[in-house]
Length: 78
Image (cartoon, rainbow, N blue to C red; front, side, top):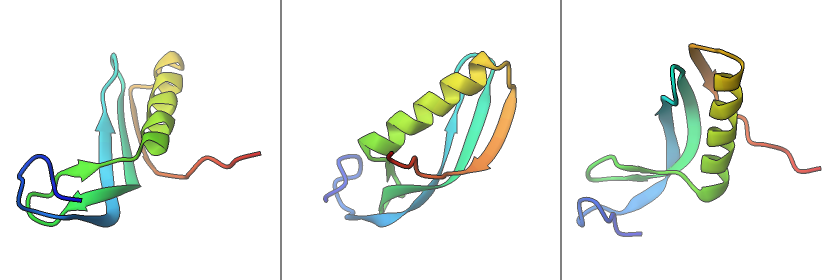
């Protein structure tokens, strides 16, 4: 897809590091599947991965975690 940010690049499948900072938590998740612009580097995470990241961040924040760095692991369907 054409990048909506820079309007010049095309996005391609890749991986990115995503940092979320809800409340007092800093959650860094590496190797998140994403579309990455080949021109500006903007990252687009799909809806399913984004929902999973937000759920994990909320759980970590409820647990009182301050800093967590991990690799992305896709949720498995039952």
